[in-house]
Length: 86
Image 1: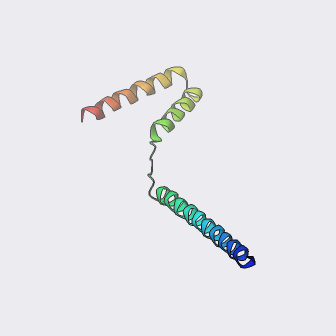
Image 2: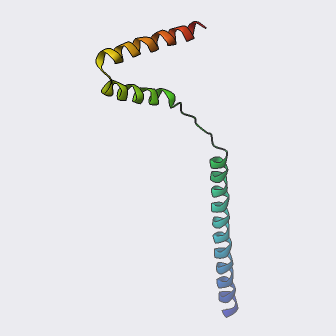
Image 3: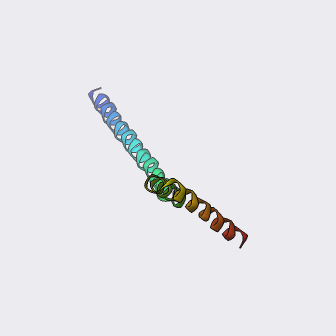
């Protein structure tokens, strides 16, 4: 009888170790898939030119005289229109 109890405890230990290993392997594969997704991600490019142009205009408006700034703005609009035509 004592042999069966020891054999049962041995089986319980083996099953516990196997289940723990299966859980560990599952976590490793799940983490591996997440790493692949991160590596194969995408790159996003943001155009900053317009933003910096707005900063530049704001600074120039604060520094320049009103009529100078208005004249400059008109001149830039004309140049932009000419570039669009070409």
